[in-house]
Amino acid sequence: MDNAIKKMDRPIPLGVVKRLPVYYRFLTGLMKKEIERISSQELADKLGVTASQIRQDLNHFGSFGRRGYGYRVKELQEVIAYILGINQRKNMVLVGAGNLGKAIANYSSFREKGFFIKAVFDNDPAKIGTVLANCKIKSIDFLEEFLCSNNIDIGILAIPVENSTIIAKMFEENGVKGIWSFAPINIKSRRNIVVENVHISESLMTLSYKIQSE
Amino acid sequence: MDNAIKKMDRPIPLGVVKRLPVYYRFLTGLMKKEIERISSQELADKLGVTASQIRQDLNHFGSFGRRGYGYRVKELQEVIAYILGINQRKNMVLVGAGNLGKAIANYSSFREKGFFIKAVFDNDPAKIGTVLANCKIKSIDFLEEFLCSNNIDIGILAIPVENSTIIAKMFEENGVKGIWSFAPINIKSRRNIVVENVHISESLMTLSYKIQSE
View 1 (cartoon, chains in turn brown, orange):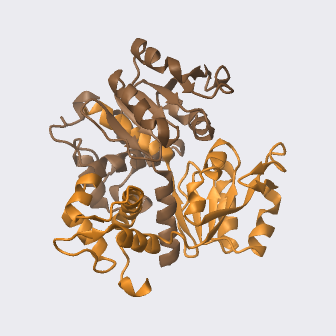
View 2 (cartoon, chains in turn purple, yellow; view 1 turned 45 degrees about the horizontal axis):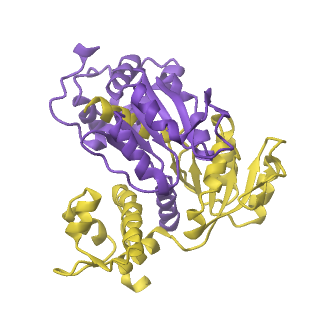
View 3 (cartoon, one colour; view 1 turned 90 degrees about the horizontal axis):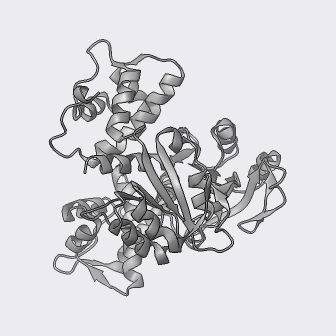
């Protein structure tokens, strides 16, 4: 697989990176329908972008598809999975076992893609000791110790704003590589750690705008 | 307020629309800190875009900010709120009272922005009759009737993939203006209805990519 992918000697534009999961999801859907090949034009039509955009995006990673034939669905899906690190085991911890934390923990498709929740932490005595995502929920007091003695790739923040900065710092200082934050503030990426903030309400506002401008 | 905003005689690029909630959130934060004005450069630095991008984005809506003075935070925040339809009452129904539905329903900041959940529906007998977001959860069998007799702007889909297409169609046929979908498929916008799909897992894949490319 490594040989198939162009050495990424310059950073890939963020817009491209954001589109890759969309391509991945769509190609996985095609595979389920046993569709073996697709032209960049068909791919473009389905995804609402231009064929040229798709070719440009993929060109960052190597040479895929053949003129007049299009893309082999399975090959392209595997390449994108590889680029995104899907199916390459990632260990995660979840901090926050409220409704959102529960929703995340129960989203089984992460596990299928190689993202495993190794431990869940909360500060609510009523939750500590109960089971979520096959993990007995631990007190947040044990988070630092757990991070020190386990190799954790991703820390999930599903807690209110008050404690999120402290926990983010704890992730950073204990070797966590990335934070997936649902806290309603922006946690910033730093030298040692990358952050992906999910602001669910932004999509509601986008929808609100679209309704008004109809 | 209407006079302050340029007539939008051509569609605003989606990229601009997507950035407006980010500006809105940041400006709201400044207001809480009682900061009254900000230069486009400062705004740009904080948000990780260029000052020219910010000026171009806002220029779609009129003329804001003055050279050497910058933007009045409150004025700009109010204009963006107006454009996004924030604080202009929107009635919503929530379909799906699982963990994700609960997390959405309990997210109080929507209500503060004028987005009200008027009713919650589920098909689980154990949930029907219990209370969520001040609403007694109703059977999904009553959704169509409810949509007919109430003026609903936004339908929230927080259900598994199986039923989401049927419910989306029901929204569309009964006057709902927009769908905010958390279903793990793409629901398409149609002539009568706009759709905003939230694919939470895409942000995890983006994070996974960033970790790998560090």
